[in-house]
Amino acid sequence: MTKKPSQLLLEKYSQQADKAAHWLRRSLQKSTSFQISDKLTESEFDVLENLTSRFARLCDILFQKVFRAIDSTELESPGTIIDVLNRAAKRGIVANDHLARELRELRNTIAHEYTEEQLVELFKKIRKVSPDLLEIHENTKKYLAAHQA
Image: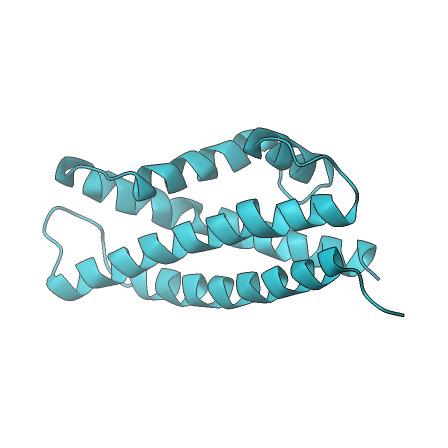
């Protein structure tokens, strides 16, 4: 049976998410070997910058690509990002739409510049919620395995 273009796109985006999750896990693991403070070494700062970038990348891939591709394969109207996140919560992929919105806002903070004064708190927050994002990735994989036969 030939797959629809939307199914092929979903598979492509899912593979991108898998790779991004791998790299986020790696950065998260490296970041747990030290305390986040105002006195970071250059190598610690590099690790946290990688973590931040990889967090934002996985957010983008999941929320903008994978979730929208799921909507497309399930013949949902495109809608806003809030609509997309609400449907992901209804599907059980995201624990609740509040968490998804919090992760999305954090990603936006990363993308739209943050001040040096915010950096330590931003790094702490990203390290704290990265496991939540990785759990959403795992939930997405489970959802796809169960619904995209």
